[in-house]
Image 1 (cartoon, rainbow, N blue to C red):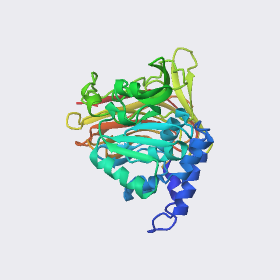
Image 2: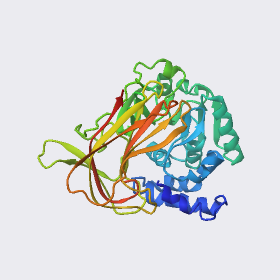
Image 3: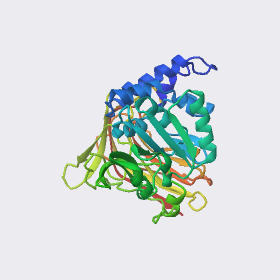
Length: 398
């Protein structure tokens, strides 16, 4: 969700948002982001409508609670974006009689969304501060069928097994064996699996004691810590920043998503006029609608002082969104070791109007010394018109 959606919340200068403000922006989140993004399950949409996400973030982020973005919750963790929460919940295909295990309580928001959909939710958080805070919030809001504990989610919760559904909101390199053992035969598990910055969200069904995997889409979650992190074999090198599939030549996944990138919205994978290359083109006719691609990477500001960000870009009839910042660009944002944003948003662009030919655009940026990760984004970012991108690259500058 773009920044223009905050206009409702900020209607009264100096006055915080009211419950009616939150209700209004929550409904816009459902109708203008979740439903166009493919979330069709009415039970899930109603659960999102009923869940006060602003109660699960600190006061400084409450005015962003219904933007479709992840937000810091402390202890190097984030609350997932409403869209990914809705998608994962929809894929779980829950029934009122189900018992669900959640790995990674975080803020407690995902458990709250699941609460009206199932009989019981058992949620585990490895970070004591987060686990205690989530329990406090969930109890204060009256979630009687959500049970939490502090522990290593890699081990599951054997005392309450088996579970009809398991949802994992942090990413291990592979599925922990205890979770397989604690899933009911025929049960479903939704879990992001893979390397630190290149993960795939899977839907898994237990059949004859083993998991059948269905790849859903590329995604990016915080890593599963504890035993899962101790067992990780592949580690990203934050001193050598690089983007995956920046030339968009890898064939689309079965899901229709672009490999290496996540949060796909409002784009097409296009072949160039000669038919020997590909690019992505964003197309939007609704002001403020999210249309973008993102990719995460390790980037250590202690070792990489400058980077050059570049891309080939072509735009057609691009007009600014409701907010003057809503224009296509190639952007980068940085996170510190606690996963808090640092240094602001840096942009190649923005761009407006029409360029009849491809233009190579680039810019060199200084990296905040406390940066440890980065998010690179391309898209229209709420503007209308068309914007095409190719040869998106990042390189360290000596």
